[in-house]
Amino acid sequence: MNDQYLILLPIVFTMGLPLILIVIGLTVGTALEKRHIRALGEQELALKGIVVTNHKRLPGGADEKVILHLVSGEVVLSADFFKNLRAALRHLTGGRLYSLEGVLERARREAVVRMKSMASRQGAHMIINARIETSRIGSTMVEVLAYGTAVSRGNNREVA
Image 1 (cartoon, rainbow, N blue to C red):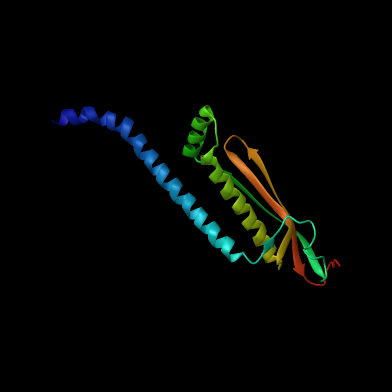
Image 2 (cartoon, helix red, strand yellow):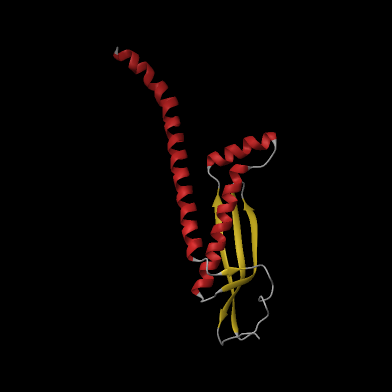
């Protein structure tokens, strides 16, 4: 009876161990992604008072004295192995790469949160002329840069 188990042992290790590692990878990756999305939601809620617009000028004109600062937020994210595998399979048949859209959305949200955090530290209440740039790094990573002009009320570097 023990000999039968010894024969099965290599099979269990060659098939079972990779399956266990795959399950652990999926579980941990999904949990980390959900935690990141939850943290982004909390940060966005905390920074909701900072208005972001792509207008090049202050809304309604500049009736008050303001301080202008350049603010930016940058993030580099990579898709996990399983998202890349799903994207590669989808690439064979064509169509939208839903598995990678979530990564881009998270990267965009994180870059905007970082930009708003920088503006908040400078005492800004608004960001005008906001822009978002993306670039691909390697085959599995994306860089997102959000930048704009933070507007603070004040007397230094006055703009009328």
